[in-house]
Length: 344
Image (cartoon, rainbow, N blue to C red; front, top):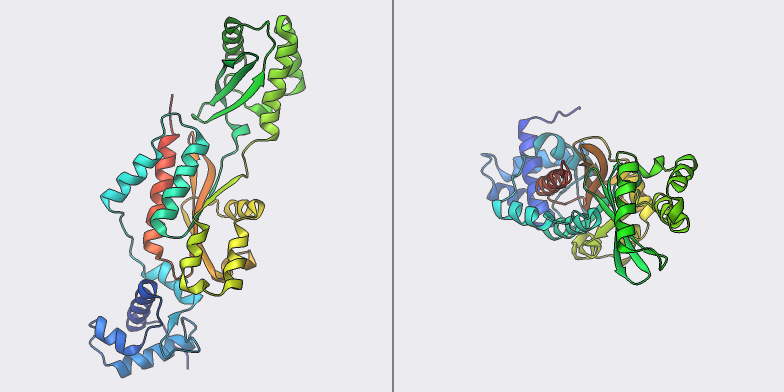
């Protein structure tokens, strides 16, 4: 006999999922009858739960008479039953204040985002940094920091800041640094670091021949910025939150999940796979990484300068509070967008 997921079954699945997310304890028919006024007896609820288990939406742990949602059940809950949750005003304020970084250092903003996401969700946070090499140059500044050394600061048109300490010849004065900064800003404004090819470097060296040794050193530093660009770099936080979840009391199981956070390339690929616009929810076996098959990932793209540039996500047990996590991920992504939308 083929069962359909009628309104009653959906109501019972919703009740079990909410209860299990809240308590981490398998849910029995008497609990549902006591906590939710469904107008049906525990016996009827028990029969419906048996049907839901047969259809693959519920599972029964070996040591319990209660049921828990299966991955199929979580997917139905997320896609069809879950109600959107609005963050409290105080939480929205905390996120805004954490991400209001005056210097607009992208990595500083991302570190703050990771911290507040992991704190608010009690899960692990992962954020993929944008590809700085593709940002268009807005300003280049050379600032003396001590004798023989200067700070090269590059500000992109989206407000991202990267910097590097350079040795400078003793004959290069502060006025020289200011003049070179102005020249390079005018020459390179609107270009990306990827545009800094050998032909352009040769032309600039010719124009700066009075500073030839230092000019080459400076341009090589810019080229190294491309080679060492932060694209693909992942910032993580709150991985130990995984250990506090009852699903991961098994040390081997927990170790498998924690090991993922030491593999930046895998995390980068995972977040790149989450690049469609909007929030993406990947549950259990939907994850391509075997170590995350007991977890869910909620991720979203963020924008820098109006362009999709990176992604942020939350990794937690399949029992995570999806409605709350989705709201947090959406709001943090929106705040990052605002931070680097139109800074100039």
